[in-house]
Length: 284
Image (cartoon, rainbow, N blue to C red; front, side):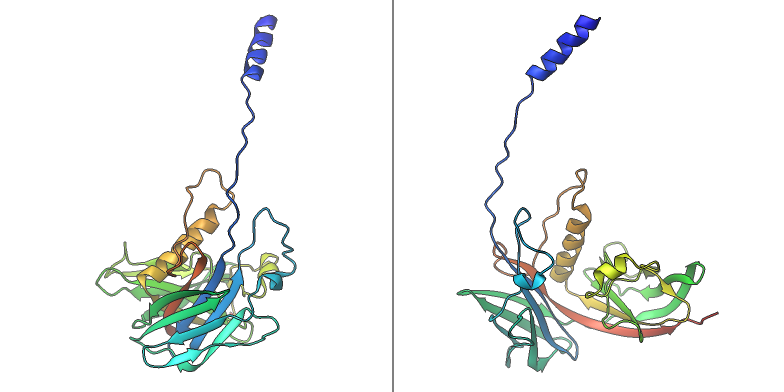
């Protein structure tokens, strides 16, 4: 029997074959996160992708920021040339002349390195939540629940944000913050989200013992937005891709951007139609 084991081991060892996988050449992409919402100017964040196996120093994200791009937004009548808030840094561009209006379509154009990239979006009619309430999960921590009567007529999609009054600087979207009406068209239902991280405090959020929760005594402003179908597909495939990152058993998901030059640009231009509501959570 001992010799049998030796034979099997030698047989298996002789069957080994080194496999060399040739990775495709890295192609740098323009990365765009752009939006316009009712009553607000267009906001555009521009950066460039970095190679996974490269030597990029992630402690210096500003090295990926894009400066000097020519960015415009038009509503079909006016053209708004966006301004770099900090020309020495780049990255953040904002409109000056055009504010979003319900029912209007906007086209974003970006000229950078001799190429032009474009995407269009429409601000739809805002949704309306029926009610909000706080439900404690442990001690004084819990989640914000809401009741929503989804309008009949398939094809609607939504994204959810919230912020704590006096504590948060920005409206934050939690992970998987989008949904469509595929299974809820025309139905009344309850749903809840956890608290998302402030975009400038992601590391602090990871270390927060109350991560994801709201607490008694908070005043929460909810921003519930209706978005277009292609805009929903971008965020939905983005979250699918992010959730499968590093999981060998998950199906790969290609992120579906909204720009024409899909091979050269990653990102989306999203029109948001927001509905706001506020809940004051009693301390006791």
